[in-house]
Image (tube, rainbow, N blue to C red):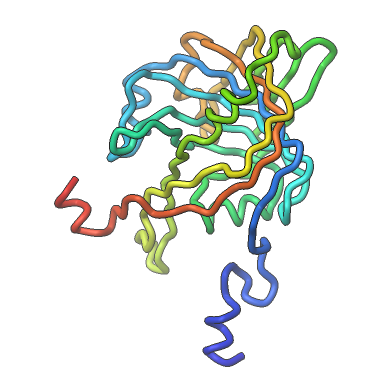
Length: 252
């Protein structure tokens, strides 16, 4: 293959059989269980990277079921999103994410910088309860429960909550092991259609694990829980801060 053809063809590895297709990435019937909880301020200070800031020690624990996604297929994920601010604008920083499908792991890490690791999450109804779980290997590390569709929520307000900026810390190593790319990425959810949204009583249990350390942001108080069913597009991102750019360091 000619050098020009390599440059023209390459967008993901492997060159001749990429692990994920190019976008756009549309999700149909994407279903969320989001449990918002209060944690320890000191714990958040250890994991939220500057120049992001936070006002309150709040975490959103998410279980997300994705039965129909363009190019990525059928999978489930689970993780923690921290409400933050960047230059005074409120958004969410994805701290941890675990899922059970290869292409969205490869694409999520390489393209956007999602902190994705392989595990076994699940989400679905159990009689009168909406239940999310996360197993890392054979070990249960998270269980979230919520009363099933107790109170309907305003669709416009929920759509607005999903439209806020989302921040990722993208890390791609050089061949010598040093960081080649170290960037703060901003991405958005687009063309969001809310098909249903509900609130209800909830509980969340996080268990310590050496390689899935979600319990290091301990649950001190469950604040609220939301169940959402939506169609949406996962938009491509933009770099808003380059940690390897000395100009950024001098101005921060």
